[in-house]
Length: 291
Ligand code: HMG
Ligand code: MG
Image (cartoon, rainbow, N blue to C red; front, side):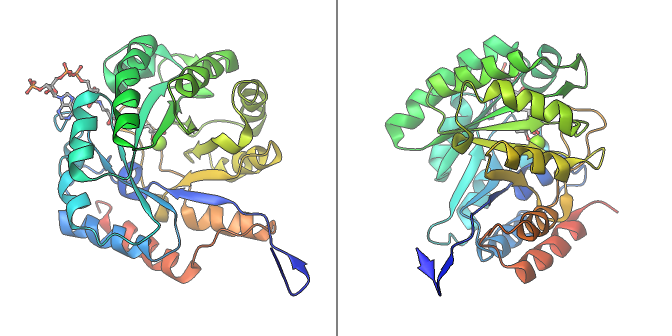
């Protein structure tokens, strides 16, 4: 489509994960209505997908125990997919009952993190996801895949690109429509991210991959830049740069949605997002963080 003789700018989509990845790590319990207010604000910002629920064990991640209530109470905006994490069949059943529009299974490229995060080896985790993907397909619910520790693991150290590619291929084969590549501890260098992508792209096309960068070392935007060079156009981010992972010691928050928006907009991409609403959501998100 052309307007006024100009080509439409290329798009970069930001997949908002703040209400899930941003908040799951908060020690202080956040009221359901506050989470709902954040999601409702984000719903008007122009996102196509917002991850706002996680149907994991409430003993493991107490902050997400009210995910069903969050999905129940938000004002669903037309055209927005409200996403939820589902580590196993029990999680999928809860997500379907709560009306999640899409779900996500989450594996890892390293054994140490897989064990700490889902109490299973990498392959045991993948085996658990197969029936989740089958049941989701039967229910007509799309499944996204995550791979954690795509460059470095807090327990095992550097991760080989071929180990990431193997998990990406498994998630592809079980039907994940997109796979998000997580620098879980946010210590990836652009060189390491680029080397990882070079190998992973043999298994899955760039238009079915997403970048998920935490920002511990302050290099997440550079990593977004490297991934854009490799053809990726979807990036996970959290308003206000909230977050961390309870099972990744020392991991900082996700790269901030506002920062990714500014970074890609300066490169001529369109995000479809409203910067004023993002700023407001960022303020609300930061106010939710424990003082
Ligand atoms: P387990 O203890 O091995 O599981 O945990 P189990 O199957 O033996 O069940 C133990 C108990 O949990 C049972 O209850 C189950 O019913 C219950 P009990 O009989 O003791 O009363 N249970 C559940 N309850 C509610 N919903 C469920 C569920 N499943 C079991 N879905 C499990 C295994 C996977 C459940 C656990 O390890 C877990 O919940 N892990 C989640 C950890 C997590 O949420 N991590 C953060 C998200 S991942 C992330 O942030 C990374 C990402 O952002 C990408 C990146 O940055 O890299 C995505
Ligand atoms: Mg994460």
